[in-house]
Length: 268
Ligand SMILES: C[S@@+](CC[C@H](N)C(=O)[O-])C[C@H]1O[C@@H](n2cnc3c(N)ncnc32)[C@H](O)[C@@H]1O
Image (cartoon, rainbow, N blue to C red; front, side, top):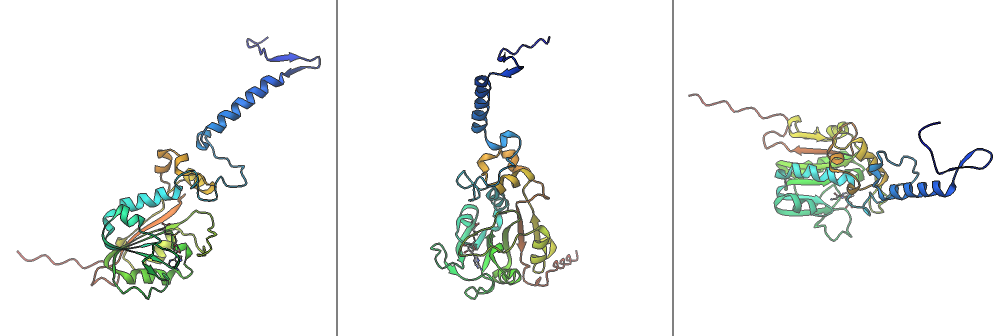
């Protein structure tokens, strides 16, 4: 005889069976508790789901997880968002993070009321050489078929010494946007290959933020609000959600992408 006696069990002549009402109550209690808990407090994500929790990047639940990394990148590089600035789709990030004198908004979509410059990034005839001090191009390059043409145009319209702040997706669901076709996903190496032709190594900083938990959360449609600050802040560059790049166009006299020669110190 053990010291524990389960008073909820009863004999039915064939063996010991649980009283259905008791176990139903226990099961209902657990189910209600789980429902109240946030997904991530379960200690694991709902791997057995065949459908996402949200198809809209979690935006019905709060802020999409990728925006945490995009905005942290811009915050960290806010000193480059200055002077004459170009942003794609709207001016939200230039206004939020920058100290600009002028902001232009680029879009290929002529129905975008926020755009001030309409054009195709692959051939920006409407924009003169060396116009901008900063170009904020977040989550756009995946829609461009000819990446090399778009990057060449980007550096053409930047002033010497001007900075491209770019983010591209590594992990994101396919976009079924009717006005833009979703072509690419990126790795740190593919970004380095694309931008490295136009800037020197020292003027190119690439990161790949995210981690295995936030990646899964974003993939199935959870939002930032479903996660804790320490989950979001943890960085594991092998499990990125986005790739970021800060690339500064060589100053005049350095158009070959090489580091400038150091001036010879004056003789005493
Ligand atoms: C998802 S938005 C990205 C920008 C937004 N600021 C963000 O952070 O999400 C993508 C924008 O790129 C535009 N776009 C797509 N292809 C383009 C192209 N070839 N040239 C210029 N803009 C393009 C789309 O119309 C859309 O406004």
